[in-house]
Image (tube, rainbow over the protein chains, first blue to last red):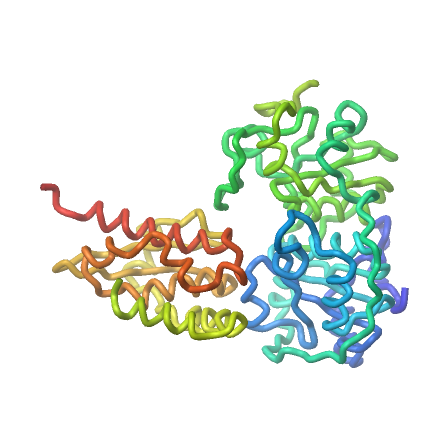
Length: 302
Length: 141
């Protein structure tokens, strides 16, 4: 950890408090002149890709989850070489502390953080409350695009296995460990195949993976976009969804972005050691041949 | 297609990809505000649920001319940009001209790589709903 963790009281209850920074912490880092140095990079990652251009945290660079982090042809993430090129161009080296923030309660920011984790980037944190909280507090925005000095980032092999689940692994997981479905209740029950207010992404069937508990991702966020307290999160995921300490958990949604938000919560805030994000998610499962599906409000049996 | 819309497509096509996004951003800034009769009655607008951000639209037809009205929050610049392109390209045109706009017109802006087809689908949906509202106002014959 190259930069000291934020000591905000709320964070100390979380399993890995060093994974979050507060808006105060970031404002101080800007004032101290550390943003955009080899020590600290701030990255904005949004759903609306023009949002960064309308004004961003001073010194923040932009990473687009779709065009920067996804391979253009295969349904996969970029490889080590492309990641090295992307991060090097943003002035980020292997030991740079990276703080990511974004719109919609850090939904895409959490996704970017998860992809950084696939490459084993050690020190990557989220700004609690994301872009909306920064703006709501009247903090400064800049339309100047920073041009950080290029950095050397090594080409590292992506390591998917610890935090990413593929379809066959989810099939093996059935009956052996809990699943969390983070989509909307309408998608879970099978009433519809895409989330309300979002376009169809072509799943042939509606429903959920049998035994999966329904916990829409946004339940983890408070009104102001910050993460709920540890006690509130335990009420949602332990008491509500039945997770137990030590569980091997798989989370999924429609294409794996909403569930990376839940992955962050389970992994870093609640401290589950083994949490995987099934990024094939419902667009794959709902179209796959001979995989079981459950419909309705009940998790269903195998 | 109306000359204004063709011109907008040409403008986008003439630019390199990063500049196309800048142009869309400029469009997002020039979307006119709703007149009071709609601003005070948002329930009169139809939500385009295919958009990834809240987008509402309605239109009025008088003397065969179509007036378009859009509402989108400032924190949704992409969606506002789409709405603004359609407003500038189509507003004030005739029913026939609007119905003749090809359904795949959004793809002609050359944004499919930068924005992904999924995001562009919101604009296609706006165009579809505009056409449907126009058709609904045609006299029965």
